[in-house]
Image 1 (tube, helix red, strand yellow):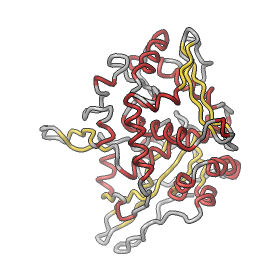
Image 2: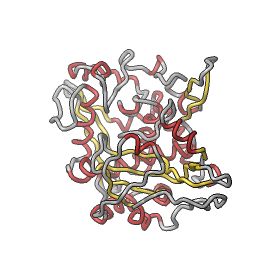
Image 3: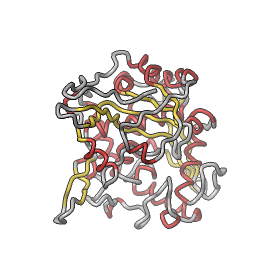
Image 4: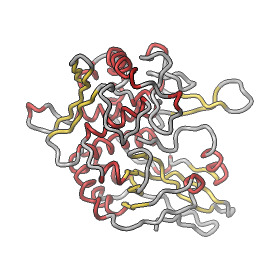
Length: 365
């Protein structure tokens, strides 16, 4: 069972340190878990019991590690938990690890030190979806259908794959996306700050990254909108937040022409924009063309009328080009863990923030 370690009053626990062997850390932190209630999930003092059987997932995740460039392999050292979720609405999520301890005055405090990666047992490991099949099932949920439904012919079809890799392409895709979230959390590129003249804090998006496509109120900039006020919703969506499936072709045609987002999912919010852009950057930078007989990332969309658009080529133009340059700049920086920068809150502050407007504690994917 993974439970918070409580220190005696006045004895603050030492800072957590990343693992030295990133590959071995996969097995060390893996934990299969059942769902938590909303109240349990919000309280960092609630530990999660490992159900056992984690060994069945180790090899698949190790293969992802082995297929990533060295810099991304090091991300596994910074994981304090890899949860295999028995039930999960989405496919995966990433969040920061809340470490609970008592300060010198005996008050409970929370330190966000290290990270959590969570994967759906059913969707990632059991359903045996190919990357293309999973993506097409997921995409249609933005148009009022379920992931379990067979892909609708009215929704333009995606073709996506990592070739020449030993890892499962879907698992590789999902983990790289979630690593994008973890880097965003660590560097604070997508942030919410108090803004406006209201007496109560009104969070506003701030920073260079959000400014590329987002307004402070978290809406897409007018020049980046591709279908009026429409912004896709994939999980727990009310009917008015989805479009009729008959609108799908028009949405994707506009999306392809504008070249402002790497994927429709990237236009959900600035955090998903970052993670999806990071994923496409990694795919196009570290996975070589097939003529080199090496690892290769390929993405395309099939529109009505037999139009096939190579999505890899879209990274060289439009707003996407600026986003790829941002990712290149990030890639050139040293990714050095600095424990002294880990945020610390009183337990009351943490619990209050979990219930108020803030950056997503985790993003379902």
